[in-house]
Length: 64
Image 1 (cartoon, rainbow, N blue to C red):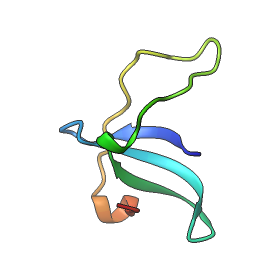
Image 2: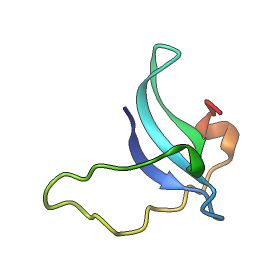
Image 3: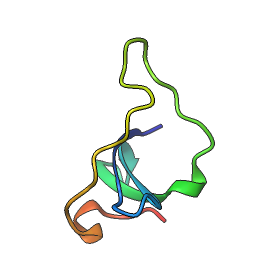
């Protein structure tokens, strides 16, 4: 389980906040193609675009 917190400029990667990467809470970069579905809570911004991550990928980390 992870929370989507951003996307890459080209839309090919999502930046996900998770708590099970190396026993730490952090943001990791994943290819957009690995996600089959997202679940949105009632009243959320479903269908809105994610913010574009402005840092470098090394700042976000990577599990891919």
